[in-house]
Amino acid sequence: MNKFVYNGKTTIKTQLTKFVFAIAYLSLTFLAMTFADGAGSIANEGFIQVTFKAILSCVGIGAEEVFNILQPTWKVLFIGFCILVAGVAVFLALPLIFNSAYKKFINNNRLKKLLIDVIAAVVIIAIVAVIFFGVVVGANNVNIDDENLNITLKALLVIAITIILAILVITVSIYAIIKLYSSVHNVVKTEISVKKEEDVNAKISIFPTLEESDKKYENYDAEQVYPEAPSLDVLAEKFQAYIATVHKIYFDIDVIRSYIAGIATSKIVLLEGLSGTGKSTLPRRFMEFIGGDSEFIPVQSTWKDRADLVGYYNDFTSNFKETRFLKTLYESNYTTDKMTTVVLDEVNLSRIEYYFADFISAMEYPVDMRYVELMQPINGRKMPAKLEDGKLHVPENTYFVGTANKDESTYTITERVYDRAIVINFEQKHFPIETESVTEPIKISYNQFDKLVNDAKENENGKLSEDEMLKFEELYNFISENFDIQVGDRIFAQLDTFTAVYVACGGNKYRALDVMFANKFVRKLNNSFDDSVSENLDKLVALIDSNFGKDNFVESVKQIANIKKKLY
Image 1 (spheres, rainbow, N blue to C red):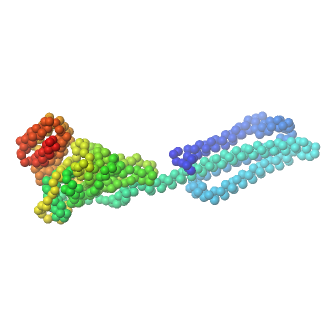
Image 2 (image 1 turned 90 degrees about the vertical axis):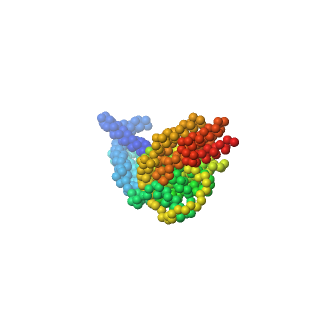
Image 3 (image 1 turned 180 degrees about the vertical axis):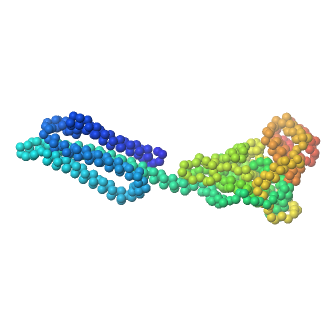
């Protein structure tokens, strides 16, 4: 509570401290006078009698001669003080009893000033009346004439002293009352100010764009019924025909099969190759064809970390600088029935392992634990509905496709990224092909696609036989022994899924093994420059031809030939 500030200086904690001290002052004063008066009564002399007798002795005045003048005065003062304390208690209780009315009062400066003036006038009149009443009553108890003029003068002196002391006591009491009023006033006003600030902050979103997405998808039905999905081989063929018919874009069927198998195997896919070969077009048109969502994000060479991709909190504007990437990923948490693809164009124009690191790591976790932290929540500030403690969930229906060119203006993609991604090479331009005419897209949900993938993995036609697996492992063992290249279990798990889905799309197992071997194993040989490299590469090609046939590992053999060219 004490972090809320009133007028930039006084905290609620400070005001409460003042309040407690003021209450303690009045209480102790009241108790001290009551106790002293009671103690004095035992000796038939109250506290005030004892005090003034001491004063009169100091100035040489006979106490018994003038005390009758003072006795009514101090009793009236004492009664007045008790009434004053009771009035203060009532005054302090008013804000608690009539909280809403008091809030209106302290916000009305004219009414407040008028009330303070009235209270001050009443206090002054009461002081004068009390003193005057006490003096008059006291004077009536003494017969003042020429014979006792000296006593009268002395009595007037004592009365003056009494008035001075009374004024001092009352002044201090009034000061304490003012402090009490100030404490209560500031506490209530601070609470009102804090409440207003909280109300305003609650209405102001840190993420205005994401709040708009909340409104847009408030009534979105993610359980809607989709038409029956075609098989994966029909899907691949119809997609090829659709983009050729509608967009005049032509892709070899093996490229389409590789892409579908790629997104079925990993949430991160890299499309590498020549510029202008359709790397960024393929994923966007595929989402268009199946009724999914896609977002095209051009990567900038200045990107250094996560903030360049998802945005950052701006302390100056008190808002989060949102990006299209963030918006797309956030909305995919609503459209869980759809497949969503984020295309990172020229992904290696900056270092992907820097700005995309959090997402690469998130993909290692189970789906319900895939979160990327955006910011720490701020008390009282409104947050979007789909953010959990300032963290963004990466849903399973979302895919990240990066396009990469290989030239001097780009960075090398690290093994950490390559091992997790599926790589598809675009090494040649595509020429017009003859296909059936398809102009209508096929709407497929994420759950339908996921079921097609799982069915493909269970199909025996797509599984590697024991003999095929032994032949492939022989290739890996040769690379491991002669080139000191090692891979983890992740890549062999990817191999099983990719092969199964590729076959389900109408391809053959050897072509699928070729794609995986070229991009997961042969690619790692690019940095080998030992004297025996050329000879071992020739042996590797011979082993490939022996195990899988001369024309079945076309891509792998081509990459090996390119590596040999770099040696000379």
